Length: 377
Image (cartoon, rainbow, N blue to C red; front, side, top):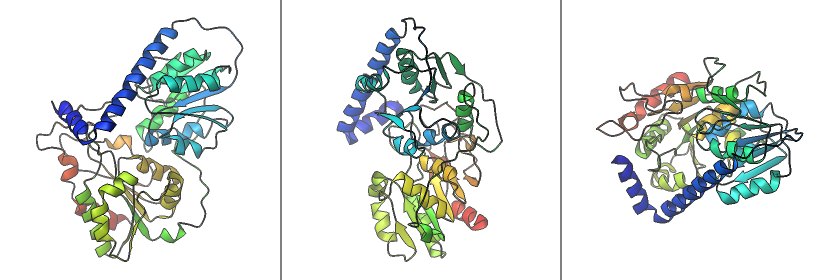
């Protein structure tokens, strides 16, 4: 019932978005069906070399592949979505093919046009959800000799990894899963998320600021929200400013619009800077490297902060299990509730089971987060 209510809410709120999204999903499912039919054809025995890598998830999960990407020759081909392309671009690969989220028939044609005449010894599918099905099936169509995949895909590759081989006790579990998927062909001596970026002097003056991310996964598209409520975020920022801290906020353009009424109030403080919707992903990484600390819910920004070496990260968690976001210099802030966490590894709930609503976020008071910052910075 809650699922239907969310879908109806989305339809009423954004009918054009809902229809477009439904169309993309239908195109995606039809393309997968066609690929499954083609995958039954026997492979050839032609000589192959080289590697093609499929990464079709969002920014956070793409950052989790960084230990593997750091060890792959930059001359190999990478297939990604336009959502995670800004992250892939930071690694400097020479050949990148950009697809839409939930790739459809035109995306398949784009892959075939670029790669149809290539011969690959291996295809590495680093997605841990069903988005990886497209990568596996497209790899079969490309006649890759060996397809390596794992974790959550419904179609199995030639080498399908379901176990996590390494665990340093600090790196999040999905990063470890991606390293384990790649382990048959890629040796990864350092399993930490790490992105090497060259920054200029633009953000060096933010060394005494605390960054606060004002967005997150709060859309009705998702079964449970990982976004810290706007009113609570406003209360936290106000508390920090009143206590003499300098604060800069980050987020995308939609986040900036949603937070606009709060930012109008906050801009009267001398130590407040609003960069939400005004900088790209690379600039955000450079900013993070300069900050005293960064406060964010479970979001791609959390993983970016870990990967670029942010000095101190405060992860605000509600439904998310700490194992999914743990990392060096990361303080986990959450409430200890019987129903939380409900987001575990690759298991996602159909909705919040608490009759009071998503109290794991709504009852996590700004004062709790402020005390943690004050005690550790």
